[in-house]
Amino acid sequence: MDINYGRKDLSADVLVVGGGIAGLTAAVSIKEREPELDVLVVEKQTAGYSGKANKGGGVLQYFDLTRIKPEDFVEYHAHSVGCYLGDQDLMVKYVTMNKIMLDKLVEWGARLPKNLDGSYCVTPTGPMTAMIGVDLDITLKVRQTAQKKGVKFIDKVAVSDLITQDGRITGATGFSILDGTFYTFNAKAVVLATGSQNYRIGSMWSSGRGDGIAAAYRAGAQLRNTEFGNFAQLVKVHTHHECVFGENYMYNCAGENITKRFRFFPEADISSTAVAEWFMQMSAARGPITLRIDEDRSNNTMMTLWDRPYGMAFWKLNHTRGIEKDDNEVCPLFIGEQSPVKVGHDMMTTIQGLYAIGDVSYCGSAAPGAVPAPPGRNRGSGILNAVFAGMVSADSTCDTAKSGTLVPLDEEQVDASIRRVYLPLERESGCKAKDVIRLIQRAVGPVEQSVYMSAHRIAIALRYVEKAKELAATMKAVDFHDLLACHEAEAMVLCAEMQFRAADMRKESRGWFLREDYTQMDNKNWLKWIIVQCKDGEMNFSTEDVPYEKWKVKPYIAD
Image 1 (cartoon, rainbow, N blue to C red):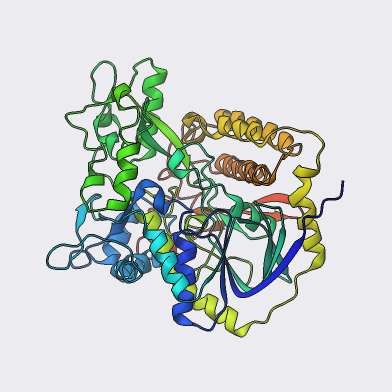
Image 2: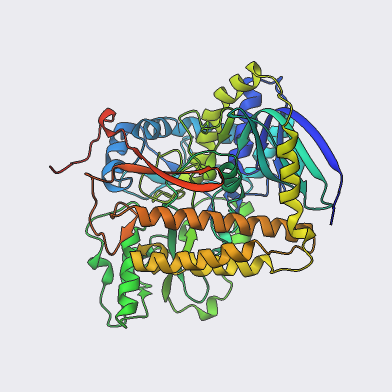
């Protein structure tokens, strides 16, 4: 069956894909540097309401640079969080820009609390960090600023494919989720700001669908650290309320403090050892695992520390729902946070003129090291890294757009995109997107398969992925919203395959990454990043040595 829903061809100097905090930051930063550039933001839902910054987190990482040096934090991070896989130069730059980023957000209209003396009102968290609250209208404020500066917006259009020629980006294609119109976007530079892969398990994070990761992969971009897409957070069993820092107060059914079994010193945030301990206690019939209410400081008290009127209505509704059933039993909730598109210090991918910022490339930048990011075991780093990446990408993006010319889109690639995009609508019958999604969730959801891993359990997960992969080839869409769901389900399959196959390769435990069958960190063999790339239609895996010799903090390597 031949389907034609019409076509619109548009062009811009810079195309920004995604209207969350990263994409909006990039758009504003580009217009501040080069006001004459034509900047277009395309968002599959509604820019300013999309992404995760406005979904309930509402905190920014804060560094008191009068008390610590950026190099001090990087040393702590390399030893205790990133475990020598992190790009220390990029981390220094991120910490150094902390106050600059906060001040910019205020300039753009974001509501950040301040003390009477004008300093930011902060709350200490990790050994060397603190948090500052931001109201949940942050993305709306930055969108308003972008509009005032002349940024153009198109909502309800899902970008599906990236178009390249001779190793550089020339634009993208997509479709309207309202009427199915096919769009082409010809651009001199493209900024990918589409978020991470979160597998639609945790509600606050479910906007991370991984479609930008999949588009970058299909276009031939390199991906890095795909195995670090396995974040999990303790939540209340009955209410699913997040228990931030609750891992400090865990008890088994015998009344034993099990935190003492895995935590021996103050840590930045939850570690995967808490998840592993929960699994081992439950496997030994020593559950349920509960938090001691008299010790637990995780009951979202931070939500009330700052004046955030926009967010308070949301939090009041969310954190009183189901409270009558709350008995303090906790379990890990798998979240994901796979963010693997590989970028350099200017946030350009391995495709010339294609940039990737925020949650689509946090781990791919290598800044956080051996930990899923966000949050990267540093609360508030997700939003702030998105702002950081959006700002630092602007100079290079402007240079690319100013010096380049519009190269016409390759119509063969466009035609291939049209066929791929509408294929689920053309099928006479087939499975539903949710059938594929549920199989992937059965692969990634159990923490013994995705967080506390072993070769046997990874193999079990991959069997679910293979089933989902076969089923995905038969998906049938009934309307344009369902068509989007099919493509998002396809991205979930791709991301899960990359995650588990890379996890199977990494035969060690390092940072957040835990394997029951390889319990030690192996600096002799695994000071490497795993690289994934599509070559001739096949998923190709390779390794890249971590250049630790050029950085200040170096690992110990046994002879």
